[in-house]
Length: 150
Image (tube, rainbow, N blue to C red):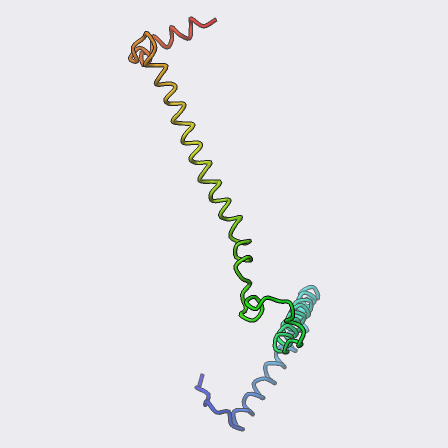
C-alpha cells in the first residue's frame, strides 16, 4: 500500500471517494446473502451503538454549556469549583474500609490469643499432673486411658 500525503488534495479526495463507493457497493452486495437472524442482530447492534453515541454527544454538550448564575449558590467552594468532593466524602469512602481492616486485625489477634491460652491450659494440666509428660506420649498409656473410660 502506498503512503498517503499529509495534506489531502483534490486527487486524494477523489481516491477516497472511489474507495468508499467500492466498499459500500461490496458491503451492500454481500448484505443480501446474510441470514435474517444475523441481519437483525446487526440492526439491533447498530441501533444500540447509535443510542450510546447520542447519549455521549448530549453529555458532552451539557458539559460544554456554562452553568447558570444561581447554580453554584449554596455549594461549598472546594467541591464545585475545584472539581473534588472534599474531606468528608473521602472519609465516608475510606471509613468502612478502615473499619473492615481493623476488624480483621482484631479477629486475628483474638484468635492467636485464644490459641495461646488453650496451649497454656494444656501445659499447666500436664505439668501439674502426677504423671510425667512422657507418659502421655506412650501409645500403651493412651490405650489404657481409652479402655478405662466407661
